[in-house]
Amino acid sequence: MRQTHDGGQSVKVLLALFIATTLQAAIEGVVINRTLGRPESKVMVTLYRASPGAMNPVASVVSGPDGSFRFEQAVTGPHLLQAIYAGVVYNQMLPQQPSSGRVEVAVYEPTTDPKIVQLTQHFVLLEPIESALHVSETVLVNNPANRVLVGSHNPVRFYVPGERRGEPRLSIVGPQGVPVDRPLIPTNKKNVYTVDFPLRPGETRLDLSYVVELGPERSFTVRNVQEAGVPLRVIAPLGVTLHSDRLEAIAQEPQTLATVYELRGREARVTIQGSGSLRLASESESRGPGLQEKPPRLYRRLAAVLALMSAMLALAFVWVFRRGLHASQLPATQKSSR
Image (cartoon, rainbow, N blue to C red; front, side, top):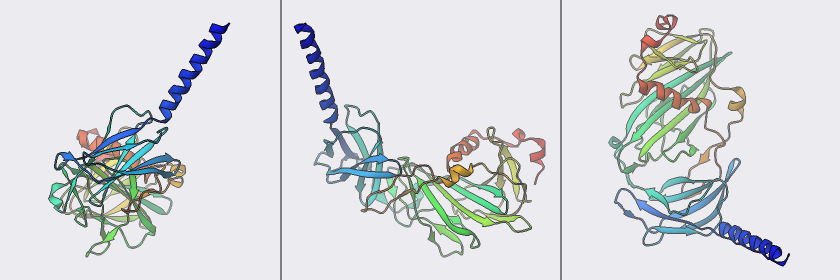
């Protein structure tokens, strides 16, 4: 009996040591300047714990001469590392099961040269629901360089009609995958806006949404105000047909059966027939606020969902475009709806 008791006590001691080791597991990492190819010192790194609708700061450290940093706090559940370098915020989600390896946080030198980025996709989703037209516009930007574009040199442009319901909302998802809300900035052209947001290496998605009133003529003007010359695709849900001599139906998304049109020229007055939506009302209403990125002020909120249902659909539409679907894949009724 004594041996059994001692064996049980040994198991308990080992279990306690395992739990203590787990709780005291440190997070070790290094900040790497990918532009210069070296570790970066004196970078503020903050550990955040994610909870529903919020990001809670746990601790902050400064990277050492060799770029290394260390957090002694235990990591259970979703956590995020945030580094601020040259006024730009870099986020990196940590795995829920921390590994024994070091975390690498990449930072980049800033530039104001807009030629380093490329606008790769641009599309607008039109969802007429009763007397309202829900407009969701998405622009994809790729930065293949090893620098981050900063300042007011962002080449993305948005046209937002003056007659609309409420204020437009812009949500941005960078290469780190964390959505943030940013304000639109007016340009010297009427109803044309840009955004002050750092474009990091990799792909950034900008999702704009607003609502306009559909008059008796049920028409809406689509404008491509991008200066980079990327074509504009216009998407209509199942049950909705768009009529314009400057729109050409080029594809049908296989899952939602939405029709994809391409704008010929810079703008088109579109007559809208039918009603339909790709979003669920419950998802639209439950959308949480995005992160407010205002360095050096730290994030206080994490978006519970992406800015729009259309933002979630963006990947599907991009997949369609990149596969190069063409008009031969459209039903005959859609091919002749111009």
